[in-house]
Length: 309
Length: 50
Image (spheres, rainbow over the protein chains, first blue to last red):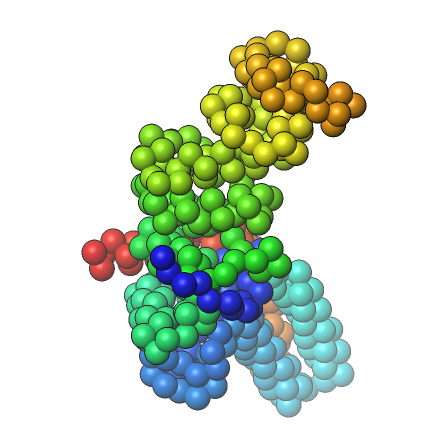
């Protein structure tokens, strides 16, 4: 049995769109998600810049260049102006052009930045993929130095962009060495895999005890898909019962997964079963209702909590 | 004469830039599309590595 260590994990920085986690090196153009100042690929100190800031800089530079050309034309025109009329026409044309371009650039700057980002990601696709691979190697180095919490934090960041089972498994294996607590910034859905993994199932079992709110449709689906394998695990039935207990949290889940509840209702603790009982009573018929009533008659018929329900 | 050429160039520059902006805006990806681009690039990178 692995001795679990008490750790403090940094909160996970959630962003609306995953590409916002990326930084790019001003020197070698390699990408990273690890948020360090110095580039791990070329070693340039302070070379890293968020990709959005980089794109904004390119757009701003282009706008400044346009403004400069505009100014140059106006100056040349003024220098060679032969009459007051020409001067007035030149200034009016210059002002109109400047106003038009300023209005358009203000309005379209967000879209122009997105176009720059698209160009960056397409042009430097090799640097993007290899940058994340370098990040992964850096995480492995940190693990070999013995800093497991930091390794997990690094893998968590990389995992927001790289979705493969190997990375998920590495995170789960690390999490299983930590004493998991309710107040930790934990996740479950991003760690779900397609294939059966006993470590993932064990982790789900832990989550069912301390963070039931993380157990949602995809997790229920996973457990049902691999139920036969899970039942062959030493505590498989207990984990399935715990997940069934998590389903009792919402009426929607009880409606969507009645057969999960039917199979493991008998193993639910009293408070969980009471919630299920109230739900089933409102249904009044069906296989779930029948099973719940059967268990109620056997175990809770004389329980005062159930009399008041 | 030079002044009128400069005025002409100003008008041309403003027009080209305006058309350029409108053309670019039609092609601009959404933030969701950018995320998908990054994820697909990384997926491709992984399979190449494998």
